[in-house]
View: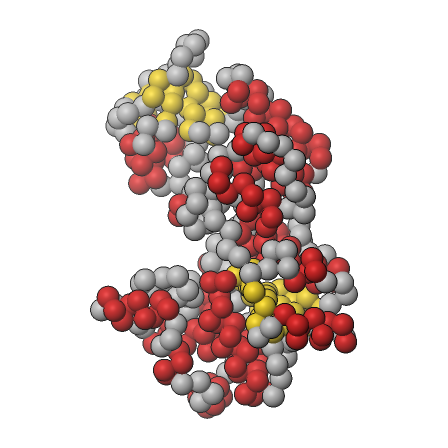
Length: 379
């Protein structure tokens, strides 16, 4: 019980003692909601999934809810402006591998998977109004990001205003005992607690887990390029973790693993962390191979054992090559990589790398392109 409600838990509302008493009395139904706004789950999602797995291992009913309806609205959490809603096709594409990714942590055979479009998409206007009557405008306006927008003269769109109401109704529709989520979801989860209490006279506990920072200390986000995705190949996962800010190492050990650090030097600590996380998602053998590859390429300055090869008609500018080799996903990203002096090029037979500083530079012959941990051979 101590491990369940203490390690990796920021707070339990309304109180930890009440949830402990309920768990000792009977098995509970607890859920985690995830809006499929991206095709990848990352270590930040894994913090909550790992905690959910602990409940599952103790025999409690675990529900992983995909926000197929709420993703079409866009969660305003942490946003100083409106989040762009997603369309049904994009949501479906993002969800395609969610179950597989979640299964890296949860026991899929014991996990109940649901989509909130199943009930939110069927609500009639009179039913929505009935739910809305359970909350006040003043209560919704207490939300911190809404307060910030009001102070700055920014708009709050009505569909954003309704987001907490609809997410909160998920708790009612599934008749849960508890909800688990990151601290950034506290307001939404408490709305669900209020609705369940008001509509079904039932108490819902809220289990909040800390938000895992990205590799650079900012919010973990694909747009920042600071995520470690659960489906990253072992070499990428290991290399990314070796770029982690040193001051975040203890937090990653606590939230991402079940082990305690044993090394002393920051580099050794980071290597222990990277090896353990790769082992968790890819196995012992792949973790060892990823570590050996990293040491060979980045410490001994040798070439990777395998470099993907691309047949490209030359001459061609470096921006186009970065896109064709999939090192960059867009022209703007490619320009940014060059501007940051992150692109290196080695001609065939050359012993030294050349840093590419001009995004319009033409590559006249084959060779190797390198951006951080990513390599591409041009043939």
